Length: 148
Length: 156
Image 1 (cartoon, rainbow over the protein chains, first blue to last red):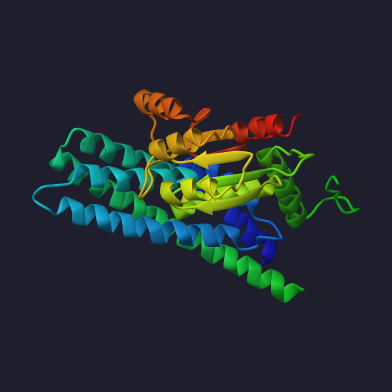
Image 2 (tube, rainbow over the protein chains, first blue to last red):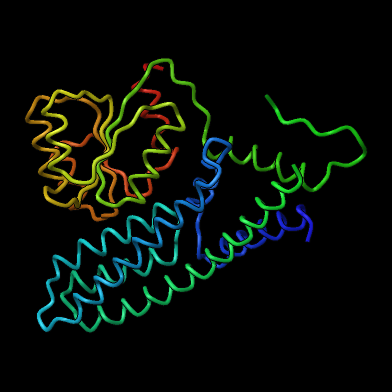
């Protein structure tokens, strides 16, 4: 596939993520911050986000496994995940966090477990799509490098 | 400098991509030229948020430092380091954002403080403002909120 076609594929793929609500305009802001001085910025931020998100989801899972859930501890994890999801433009994941926040506020353990299931699904979807996005970006960089 | 299309009947897809990308970047980043050197402290326990907020500030020419908890923020300010702007999250490790903000204000620090947080409730907003932040912003921190504040700090 030639460079132009790859770039179009990437653009269309990101657009589809916007249309599905997986990403919102905040992701465009992040893309805009990538330039020649920060050529790998998008990949670095996505990697950073995914590492943190997985850690937090695991911590939430662990917390909800206890008989007596420490909801204030849970709150701080949910807050962190909601914040980083908002900051990277992960729209559906951010919304899923709001569900967990509400269940946690209500001290509803069952509700929290259901909300965590949704968060896990949304995160897995996002991660798959981010991996595809980064694969396209790397292919573009490789082709551009070969053409120089 | 405005992007220029190559001579010829039709721009290539690549040219359109590059021009579109540049235009989009300009649109999104709302260009601003600061006359003065501004400094900012970003206090956020989440690495992704902290990195993004710092880079957004740096894209406007603001010199930034970042810390990941309230105690370190207070200690840095207490050591005498001055900032034009402090961006602080509400929920922080070690010392939370509300208490850190109070302690910073109690030291007589009058710089602009933005409470940038994932918390969205009215009670949280009121609590953060009462603690001493000047502006409460629900994450994400975006140019729409930031640029007018930078202009104000720059005396524009």
